[in-house]
Length: 65
Image (cartoon, rainbow, N blue to C red):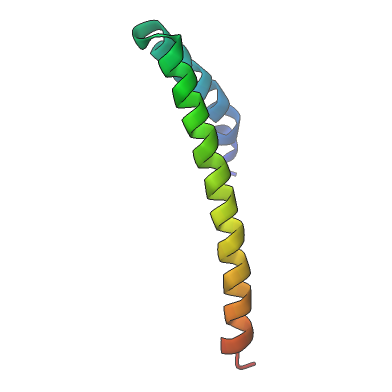
């Protein structure tokens, strides 16, 4: 329950940060940062799914129940 507020506010914080970056450094840096964040998000999702897959395979061998 304590993370619900973070889930709601996180997109607003991201948008605010991109606007501040746009105003201080320019639109191109803001867009590059947004693209880089997207790449990291996709990469994190992919590695999480692979880790789950490997942990499931590992538990099949190591589980002694």
